Amino acid sequence: MSRYDEIQQALSAVSPIPADLPKLYFLGDTGAGKTTIIRKLLGTEESAFPTTRQMRTTVAPTEYVMMQNSGYDLAVVLKSLTEVSAYIDEILKSAICQYFLERDKARLARNMRQTADQRFRLYYMLSQDASQRVMEQIDLFLPQLEAKVFELQNMFPDDTDEKDVLIDLALTEIEGAYKTLCAEIVREVQQKTASVCDGEQLSPDRRVYKYHSESQTEFIAKCKAMLSSEQNSISPVVEYARIRGGLSAPWMDADSQVVIIDGEGIGHDAKEAAQLDSRHYDHFYHADAIVLIEESKKPFVAGGKSALKSIFQRGYGEKLYLVFTKLDEVEPYDTDSPSDDDRIAEVRDGLTNVIAALKEEGQAIEFETDRVFFLGGLDESGVNDAAMESLESILSGAKELTRFEHRFIMPEYDYEMLAAFLIESTNGHGN
Image (tube, rainbow, N blue to C red; front, side, top):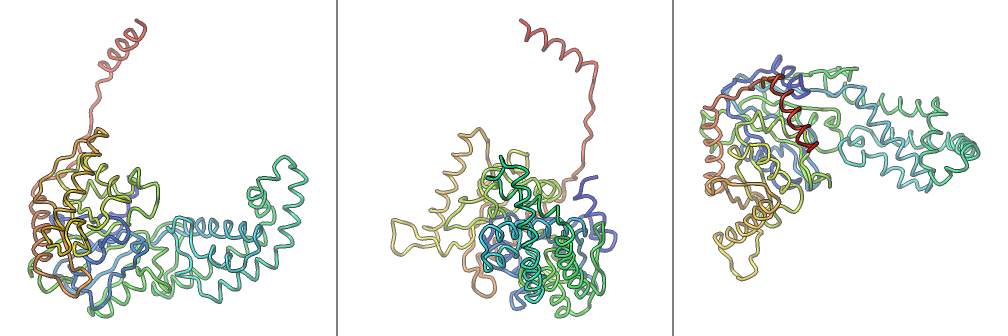
């Protein structure tokens, strides 16, 4: 069973959702506007939930199950203590190595904030007092570390240029002092987790925490403490979340029931500019619609192109809806007073160029123009008529796609035929 399936089973055991609800997977570069659109669908703009920032915001995939039921449920899968400890070890070793080489206290404080890829933001959960105590302990055992590095340099004189490797090895040698540092941080993380999760802490294996409230105000406050992209949130230890309840904007149909999945932003990792990370593929399969969100002003400059390619490469092109946000920021080069039609034409030209480039790479891409939408005015309160119409079209389209049954077809292999083909291939190669 895949990790995705295990997570879905664990969540469904405590917070099930109807099987026939349309599922939309929101995909896009960091800052493209995914979370802003979700706010408008949920009607939670005034509550500033979910949180939005220009830097990476969604740190764990979150399902928003918009359905009319009693009260509001939040179910989260907490990462294992083993995984969190590994992140802490990665951050601490990197920070100590840099500090050993540079002796820059300010740099040490910055390096202790998060992993290099921003996937684990320790500073959300670590108080300033705790950070200060850890840095003081690093200073205390630095002479011991220096002595061990010097000893290793004498033992391995040919490797003196690989000082970062020697520092890492030295930390292993003086594991007592180093483990004390790690334990201090783990203790802080556990205390913070317990304060938000009603006393529950991280365990050696992943675990599910559930919260229920009849009050929307109290519920959103709890969601922020669990999932916000800001300090005093425990979002770094959350692997996956499901929010279920009557959260929907007033302009939406009262009978609308849908699952919106806000995935991790693409493009914050330079590798995704060339190849989309495989963490998205399970969502591609299980979602009824894939909503790829790009900025109108600078489309496909980060991970959008690789996402578009991956969607069609894996046969999910029929699920794709393409949404260009921030249309009002587009400035066509050939007019001083552009209309929305001028801006749309400019963006369409960019889309045409990207599709042509992918076709030159051998990737066939064809999709209906009525599945391309352009949204402006997202920074304004509420939803304008054009955006409302576009979002309703996407939701109704996804609902229509749920009519088709999804099932896995187990392949069957004829090994006798395989043997014959292998012999034929071998003989042909020999000729």
